[in-house]
Length: 593
Image (cartoon, rainbow, N blue to C red; front, side):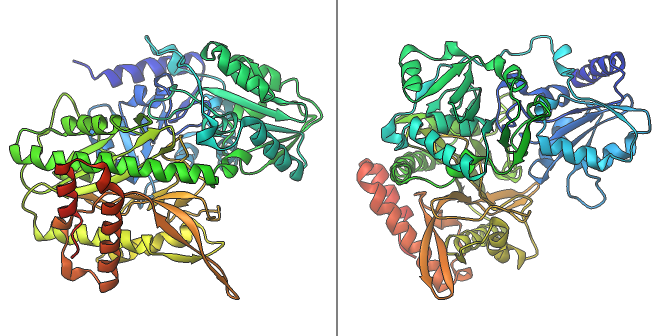
């Protein structure tokens, strides 16, 4: 039987011939350049069979390739098998960048095609700059995958709900006023919004259009005369409409956005070239002046308000209760035997659902036993369930969306006897985690300044992890969101008090095990003197780190003190919300060492 991906590639090549397109690009994106997006926009997954969240497919008449990063090398090799698609491991020695690959394939007179809505303004600008010596034509408005996708999902139609002021702390009208102040400082008449997370935060709306991310498909437009929300009006009930109109918001149809952009003339338009899709800027009249910079709302919401910080801390405690309840149950279930990865993930969701204000998981739970955990973004295969054995390690990466916050936490735990290598690697990851949690740094630092702090204990053993150390987490929004990131890659955003970022170093050994320990950190001001202002992190995730996995002799006295202090705080915050069995389990799991 022919591989279904081979058939889809053949059909796509047929459409490319019809349009006289020689090379066609299919990215992982939607018109809002979201990390996670509705099923309708999973074109790259449809054409390649690769289910990872990041990757770009390229297709010619003779070959096809997938470019993806180190998180997905193992997964991609498995999922591309038999498809005829070559895997390009990004940033590995000898592997070309996507643009270098395009440069080598595109001869003079050839045509490069893509759907311009799925690329940012800057992505297209950079690509065309890299290909400036290739005398080629561009076709930027062709969604060819749509023409071969027989039963493509429609646009999501989830109902919107207004995020109550007791959770937001600020009404929409007040937020819009602050945005206009920023626009004035930038000498802008118009501000274009494309990011679903920014739109959700500014207009205080949430929905379920994207699985695990409570956002609605919409565009935003702010000028001196008003604020417009472009959205499917059927998603709004009467109360929603009344609230938004009271806040000075004009509601317009989602599909009207690009037509309205064409009507804007002689204006100074502010936009983020990394968050605005290529069609947005292409739709604007030449009489306008474009002002590019970081998205106003994206930066504004990157630092929690006092109300958001208070709510998030409360949310994290309830999430910790769910985690401890699960781990207590998990130890018993493993001892009884017959527990599968998928079953464990479902049980954790049940424990979270028991918590007040729970909405949904914040991403697909990574429930990985043994060597499966070496795949950083492993996904349970329901057709081939894996039983959790009675030796080795189990990794659980999960989170929740609540009305008062978004969580992301990873624990790696023992399910039986461990090897010396497993204990050593676990303790190295713990040392890395503690190093970042204890970091003190000068105001003005960026995530790339701090990333090596966590890597040092692992680097000392000549190992590394092929991903960043941490990412931002939105407030009741995307679990993977800036503006802050802890990464070796250049980061231009300065870390400020009120920002939220994860701390998740790891060690991943193909065919053996994967270990990751993740907490969420809140940036705080630590001290100010004649040398400057110094910041540090407050850990706001609360769940024990498995003492059974630790090589005590590898820890310094300061690291032991940090661990003991953290465990005492976990017990003090969670114990009163637990049942008798769970409390006894927690007392043992947080004993001083």
